[in-house]
Length: 109
Image (cartoon, rainbow, N blue to C red; front, side, top):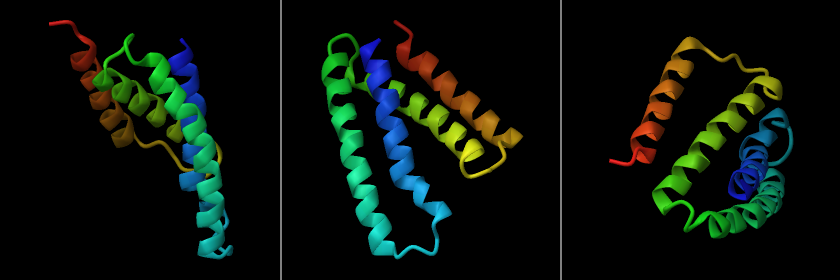
């Protein structure tokens, strides 16, 4: 469970670092890059421990898959709530296909 929690926190920071500046178009690019780097450092402080804790319980392919699913959920919430973007049907269909990929990755064949 710690892996999931740490990866979620990590993804919140990274989503803010990558997309949070889009509401501040008037701020100089060098400033938003610098601020994004600081936020990304906080992301790494959670990402690296998440992978350390999770490795062994999950293999690296499973860890990456978990991270991607969390990333989609966090990003979708951020885009809708913070950037006021709409979630269209084709995005949902695409996400469903990604979730199907999770099935194939975690299925013990």
